[in-house]
Amino acid sequence: MEFEYNQARLATVDRGMLRRHFPSFLALSFASTTILAVGACSTSSPQEGRGGAGFDSGGFATGSAGTSPASGRGGAGGSAAAAGGGGSEHGGTAGVSGGSGVGGAMASGGLGAAGAGGAGRGGGVSAAGGMTNGGGSAAGGRPSGGGAGAARGGTTSTAGMSGMGAIGGAGDPMDNPPPPLTGTTASVSIKVTRGTTISKVSPGTAGFSFEKSHLSDGFFTGTHAPLIAMFKLLGPGVVRIGADDVNNSVWVPSATFVKPGTTSPNVGTAEVDALADFLNATGYKAIYAVNMRGSSTPDTAVAELTYVIPKLGANLAAVEIGNELNLYGISNAQSIWHSFAQAIRTKFPDTLIAGPGDFEDVNYCTQFVSGEKSLIDIVTHHYYRGQAGTSTATLANLVNPDSVVTSGSQSLASSVKTNDIPGGFRLGEANSYSSHGQAGISDALVSALWGIDYMLTTARYGSVGVNFHGGGQNMDGNNCPNGVSSCDRPFRYSPLIEVDSQVTAAAPLYYGMLLVSQLGAGDMLGTTLTNASNKNLRAYAVTPADGSTKVVLVNFETSTGINATIDVGGSVTSASAVYLRGPSLTSTTGVTFGEASVTAEGSWAPKPAFTLAQSGTTVTLPVPSASAVLVTVH
Image (cartoon, rainbow, N blue to C red; front, side):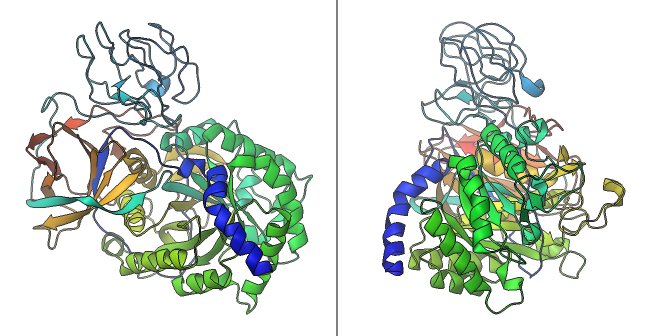
């Protein structure tokens, strides 16, 4: 009876539950297509580690042509620009210039139906339902029936996802070409195979993972403005709360916050209330973990979730039980997990369960899923390329392909299909090198390029997202007795840099997440590279719902630039490029995307996209060494 009951429940979860719990995963309409080419995959080695962080909100403008929005969401807080006035938000006015936007990005109006275009980064009008591009600053675009807006215009749809900044398309052909390459160069051709979808890039592909103890220090609140802004800049996604510290977590309803920069295993109603405020402020959903070790029992887990589930409401993506069970060193870990999962399912039949969240053992994961398929709604698996401080933690290993990424993703996809898991699989915790990362690699430009490649490689084989792990002081064995400078195991791989439980900067990995968020959701197409032997170049192609094409090229070469020719398989009317780059692969500072950095406050004001030469079905562009480029083709 239990098996029959759960099989019937799974049959309904596929549509009903996922619509209720995963609205951000539904298909979105985007205004352009992007192709990606990336430098390399990576390889796996067992250890613990973390990656994670959040992004700022650029904001989606909702103004339509010829009118100024009375209110527009965007930027990091503030009110929308009124018609012709200087507001502090990104909702551009139509035909009338606005004022300055949040974080220094000009919010001046989009394309006027009549009259001159605005003098800033507002954005033109694109198809309704598309992603708005009024976020930080949008590049390209032209006014409708008036003079060209100064430098930036971009496109802004009449309906879109709020909170996420985007870069617009190209303006007039070759009015802003990228600078040519210098030094050693090579030529590579990329052919996009149209008409055959090989996979999909899901909404919210770039996600975050954090230690559960981070709930105790006031990190996740509705008033942590830089963290909220960093998250919103990426758009709605999934944050996972759990990891190693969930194994010490205790539900104490009366628990109070501890001093910033310190942590406690105790979690209570105040911490959950603050998490709920944070999720409401960012539009994110949480995978929330409960402890299954020590004195924890199914009853204690149910008691905690009795408060958590209604409090988080629709912002609860799933519940996770424990962390990396295959490292517990006990023979009955799965049976204990089962008892917790069954109690949760009985008490909360509409709540999704994610698991097993194993550490790097794909065989363990797939066997676990086969045995627990009636209780698992989302498969989670953890991945690291190797362990920091060992001979595997090298630059070469991070830029070269890891066959485990491909084979592991294929095995997970097969398990999902065979066992009819409705929520698919996601890399619930991942990063470059475990034990909090390798200095000069995990915190450098190469981590951004690797992150792009990892997200898109796993998406190619069926992943619905990657949660990069991160953290701060006095958690997961990172002892910091006298402030951040005294930490003995700092989270070098974290996408966000924090001091005393406050975000202070975006790390290089964050920029890779930002690029993929700008790519958006859509169908993935196959790509074929010619003359690319011995070149660390990767290419991915995605077509959003509007039929345009987006391509990303990631060049892992240390000193060789690539002159790339992309054949998109259809007539090209315009093409633009936005670059992610820095001084070198091992640079820990000076990383930019769209020729701009993300500020400590979480704002991002990219410069106009470069316009590319095109002929027939092809576009050409330079791809400097140690860089990635997002190409948008119409």
